[in-house]
Image (cartoon, rainbow, N blue to C red):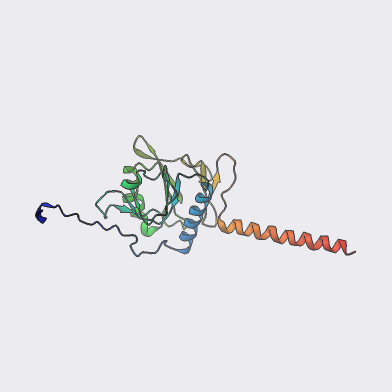
Length: 221
C-alpha cells in the first residue's frame, strides 16, 4: 500500500475569465475597440498564425493568477486562430503579443502608462499604442512605443498625429469623430469598420436599384 503522505498534492490553480468590470469606459471607447479588433481580424483573415483578440485576460506567470493583464486589443504572431480561447496563458501558447493597443481614459491612465507599460515591455511586446479618444489626459491623444534593445522608445508622430506600426504595416491616425483610423502604409487604403462596409453595401444596392428603375423607365417609353 502507498502512503498518501508520500503523494505530493497538486494544488488546482484557478485562472478567472472575468473581473466583472465593463469592457470599456464609455460607448465611444467600446466603438473604437470593436472597430480595431474587427479591422485587424479582417486584415489577417487569411493568415492562419496571426491571432487578434481584445478584452481577454492574458496570464503571463504559470501558477500565479495575479500575474494578469487584460489588453483592450492584442495581436499575436505564431499562434493559430483556433481553437477559440477563453483566456490566454503565455506559457501554453509560447508567444507573447507582438502588438497591444489600449483605448485609454483618465480613470485608467496610471495603469496604462505605468503598470501595463512595464509589463508589456518585460514581455517583449514589440509595439504598444495608447489612444485617448476623449482627450482626457494624453496630449497628443495617440502615443506609441516600440521595443528597441529590450526597452520602449517613443514612436515619432507624423505632422497629423499619426503613428506608423512596423509590426502590422499600418498607419494609425486619430480622426475628428474620436475614432482611430487604420491605413495600409503601402497602398494608402483605409481599413474599414464593419459598419462602414455595411453602409457602402447599402449605398451600392440603393444605386443599383435606382439604375434598374431608370432602365425600366426607358424601356417603357
